[in-house]
Length: 186
Ligand code: ADP
Image (cartoon, rainbow, N blue to C red; front, side):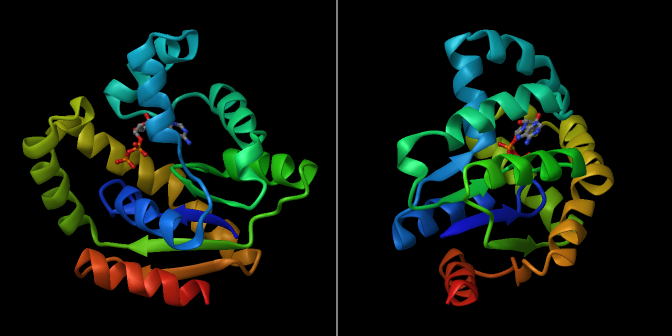
């Protein structure tokens, strides 16, 4: 199964992807996690990406494309994938389609977790206290939400036009939302 997971920062994409990956046995590919590893390891990509991440900006498309192409080329992606955090703008959505076409693994569904912005701000503030992620401070969060609104939200329409979009209510318990996602895949 080849799934693109959409939704604003703090919508629970990562949590849900981690549960789904066990349910359907395909790898969870989180570009946020890949980038944070690259930063922690001090790779050339990590060094270039860090300042964008710290400001809540998107890491440039050409850096992201290299990263995602490499990851999607791995053997464990043969049975499918859950993509979390990519694509984040229309250029990335088109680039992803090209890559997936080349490897003959087109996306089958785009699941969007829908959560209103008020909830998001609350959740991210809580996460900042609990996890201390450096891009969860108030100013950077506000910027990530603005970037989402302006650049990432249109990606939903892109998948709607392709007939792949399914919107899921992202408010509720983790188990409830996981069940909604699983239902959407059946
Ligand atoms: P969140 O969804 O909470 O914003 P992520 O872990 O998905 O968190 O992403 C963290 C940061 O990593 C983003 O703010 C951005 O700087 C960078 N990033 C992740 N995925 C992408 C992407 N597809 N394109 C550009 N930047 C990205």
